[in-house]
Image 1 (cartoon, rainbow, N blue to C red):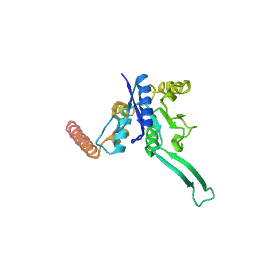
Image 2: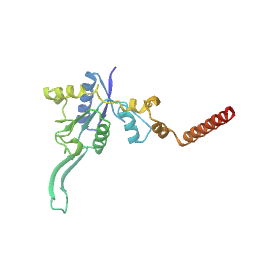
Image 3: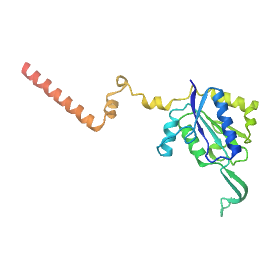
Image 4: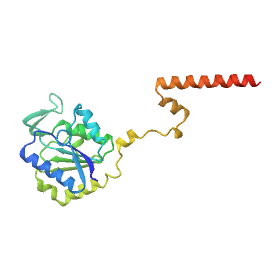
Length: 214
C-alpha cells in the first residue's frame, strides 16, 4: 500500500511550474508514495491550518516545493538600519512553504525541500538544517539526475521509521502502567468527583460492616 506524503506547494502556478510539480508527484508515485496536498488532490471544509494539521497526521513524510510566487525588481533589506542594503530581482515563494515545513518538522516527519534555484531561500528553505534541501531549475529533467535520485532514495528510506502522529494521538494510555497520580490527573473533573464519591461510599460501607462485626 502506498504511503501518504504531504506535499507543500502553492496554487496559481505558471504552466512551467505546474509541469514541474506534476513531474515531482510522478516521481513520488513511482517509488510507492501517494502525494497529498490541500486544495490540489485533497479537499476539506475546515480552516486551512486545521485541514493541514489533520492531513499531516495521516502522512509519513513531507515534501516542500518552493516555487516563485512574488517577484520584486528592486527593494531594500533592513531599511534605515546599519545593515541596510539594496536588493535586485528578488523572487520569493509562498509563506505557506515555511508554515508547512515547520509543522512537518515539529511532527518528526522526514522532510525533503525542493527550491527553485532562482528563489530566495530563507528560514526553513535554507541548506544546513536537519533535512534535505535541493536547489533545482524548474525543469522536469532536473528530477532525473543522479544527485536528485540519490537524495530522493535516502529521504524515502527514512519514512518507515518516522513517527505516526495519528497513531500516537489515538492510542489510549494503558491504565495498568499508570500511577495513582496519573490516573487521577487523567480524569475529567466530573469523573474525579464521581470516583471520589464512590470511594467515600465504599469506605462508609466497609466501616459500618466492621463496626457490626466488632
